[in-house]
Length: 243
Image (cartoon, rainbow, N blue to C red; front, top):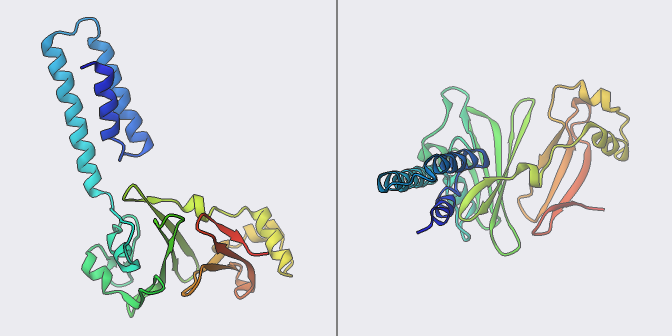
């Protein structure tokens, strides 16, 4: 079997790795191949094949640790499938909650029909809201907001090839101060980009829908906390501004 074919097979096996990890693995394989090229004894050939299988095994082991997902899962199943590294839940008294069973106990409101969860308890100040959207074709898209005392954290996970992939930059990209200034002015508030940059808060706060596909974007400035800046409607592909 040609070496190139074997290396291509290894590339498929390490597909679960991120871009940098994959690049490092494949570069090392090709480097080793070039070193033995021209003097490929049976022993070197066997060692090279063995090395590929070792990398393949490592990739498969990494795949096991990556959070899995499937097309028909409910919002609670989606939340339960995410690791504590991907979606941190912190108890203000005890610290990060890692145990999946304990994490599920933090669900204060469960609306499976509408794909909506709210997490909060006596010892968790931050209110975490989790909403399951469906992409065109049915694949799950999980959007999460975690409201702390002064800062809101936002997460977006897309189910691709049965694995949760971080897609926050795809669905809820960071808003520049210049664009934020335009939103404030459109909503009737006079704030410059410089003014907004001086505020140590989230630029905006997202409010996820319990029913429907429309999310609301509120001002993050402490003087305009209830100011609605924009509404976006999910169309199965993206969240587009409502005109």
